[in-house]
Length: 282
Length: 352
Image (cartoon, rainbow over all chains, first blue to last red; front, side):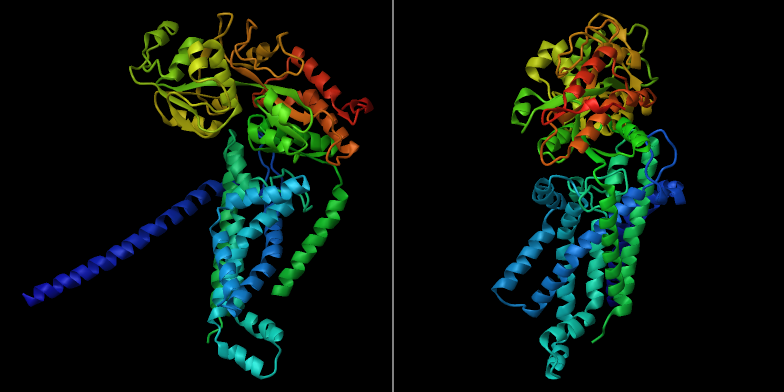
């Protein structure tokens, strides 16, 4: 009788454990299906020409996505340039001054900004910059993406720096090091892995954004380096080509999707490595 | 690590400014209709190779093209529908409509055995009004003797987003059916009495192909590229017309086109004309001297438009578009010639 009760409870425990395993496995299935499907359709269009040439008009074989690749890299560069200094500064402020009226509001604003749909950010960037400057541009796209990146960097910086023991800071100050030097030489380097991870995840996020770019970066069939002119990006390119009636363009869209997915996966993988290798243990 | 990244960033930006200084003003920007996008991208590629002028055209939809032109963020807009008087009154300056090429809507359906069906205008209107609900309805049978039609319900498919394609289709239905004109009306999007909505031409084409016994309307090129069944439609002169390059061109080759070309040529009076044809326009400001634009840029734009209306037309047929017929081309030329820069004529300096 007693034995029976125990084995039933063991059975129940096992049942629960294995259903957790099963559900977790099922949750990863869509990811692998997506990867498999994108790879299956996209791999055939991959070649050297594909990443070094501009798109061809419909009905002509060949052509590549060079404009999208260069555009995406430039957009990432500009948005990083705008968001990294701002994000780290804000994160540093929030971790240094955790209480207080101003910190509360800054934190709240960052949370709200993080929850803002990216398409709204695109419209705001359109109204602020595109209309004011009289044209679509790489710069306006960079601003839109940086607004998405800033909260991610702020959060990552704040959370990492909060974990650093205050003894470290106090030791530095006690040795007569100035406050600014303590921040730049002690606090930030100790939290660098977390900050870099935040930046990499932010980049991975904005690399795949389409909505904020439609009315800012706009797209461009040519390679453009000028920050005041429109520029293409991989998500825009995929969006345009996937909705066309031409099989050649569908093929370009699949190839570009594979390229984009690969970049995003790589960035995520690199951020894992950064966390593992650079993690400062206390 | 960080210094390297920073150095790389700084270098790339320096590079970007250096090369932008070289690029100068030889880039034109346009936005609008998705329908002519494949053709325009072909034209602009050839144009770039020939004259070194890069034209950046983005297909954001007809409505988007009109809006961007109104807010003056682009050099030209493109649209499958024309702007009405109210919209033009809101514009900061006079906008002209330039017909560039012709396209057509087709009625496409998914039936077993892929029969070629003939439709009269009233039958099309009543199917989309939900008054004919069965494929073996006597009125469909009457036009298609000898075709075996299934006794299944008709599944109507239409666009869910605003579109020039819908505007052409509903304009046609208004002309041929009083019932439609009073109950539904015309526009880029209307409240459909029956049917399923799908986004974009590609969405409607996909839904028709997946849904047995469905019927819908798409741009000719989408139906042709997807090998879909295309309906034959009775035109104003009582002939059943298949949509083709010649029948669509015929529809536009009529004397009734007004000087500003703002007209739908649906239900054309031309005897051989396909009744669901339409222009697609490029929209520009007639006075190009605005917002600090250089005269050189205005000149580039006019040269481009002239080239598109002439040499550019040869790329239309291979992509299932229809060249401008002579009567329409004359109007197009006149309108391009009327574009000026603060009163100064732009085309005088030679055309491509």
